[in-house]
Length: 108
Image (cartoon, rainbow, N blue to C red; front, side, top):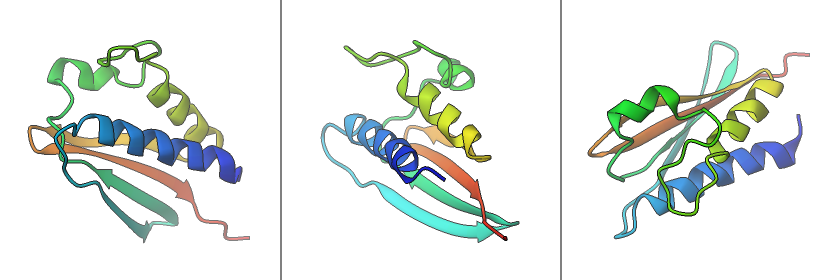
């Protein structure tokens, strides 16, 4: 596993969460070991991702931010898949958004 790339994914998700809570809020980070995978959940208290964009958030150049490139989530998803893991949108709504990153546990 490339520790720097995993840190990049976490940092990207944290920075996105901070940006969607301009008036403040909390970022919750939780983890679990389940079915041979390490899962990390990041949940913000922002206003959520518009419903019409949720299916497309991992597409290149899709952004809702002024000055955004629309590459952060795309690159993060690719990094996770390159590590036999994944990045998923678990839920999003007016009370916030939750993402899960998962990685296989090293059993060898």
